[in-house]
Length: 356
Image 1 (cartoon, rainbow, N blue to C red):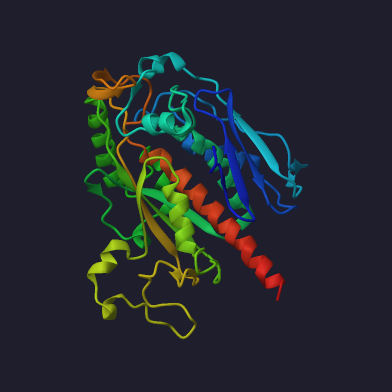
Image 2: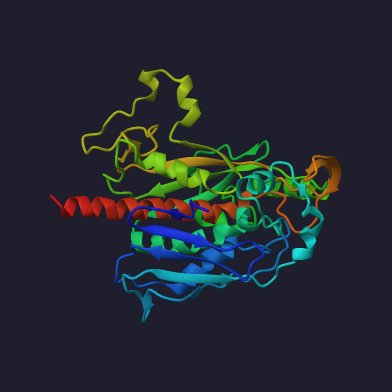
């Protein structure tokens, strides 16, 4: 299987399956001498882990990171950082009923057709549990970036939207509720909706908005490695993601140029920021903001028609422990992938400047 690595200079490779012994990864290219706060890394893992509230999957995993290499006396050594995250609460029998069937909108069918074999226990490598390794890498990247601030939050659940611009939101309130929405009144409505959806054995989608502040000018490598293109690739690599837009996004397609242009201030900043902090594929020093759309979880705790491996359509009821809505737990994953992209471009930009 190819495609398990991301990055050019700051590079991550992940491994492991949902119901295997452990997940893990290797972070290569991290500079030496960075003092790592391991508690901060574990905090990021706790934001993503299952079982953290009544509105997410009740699988119980501590998701404790065990670092194997690349760190000495609390600092990075410049060598590959290897780590594992043991799986401790697998219930593989929960998936025996789908051994010979393909669940709708899952990777079951295409994995088996492509590889000739699949790990049906929780989806194996296609499970969103793989993202735990990304959060470790992102947490390291965040500490490398220091002054850059990355804040993601739930901006919609189903038809319920935060109707305030991000500038009016207090990011310190993101962790104050299980939805991870800084608009507290909207978060209450979102939580009630998810509880009702779960009660009916159904699922619902939503969006995560991410805001990146204090980004230096110059990150991004046109023509094919534009900053927004890499952010889009990183976000679209996350399980259940169906869409990505930055800056004005699709709304910009409805505007006239006279409405959309970001006019300059004398210091090089812009009066508006419909560009989303990126021009010509390069960061311009303004806030980078984007939105990521997540589909409803495909496993429903209700009857559905499915395909079996003999070509028959049969009835199946989903079992196991699943999120009724992924977006609350997706928040740290979005932040992590944004941090990995920026860390990579930061090192590329540094290398370029050192060469001239």
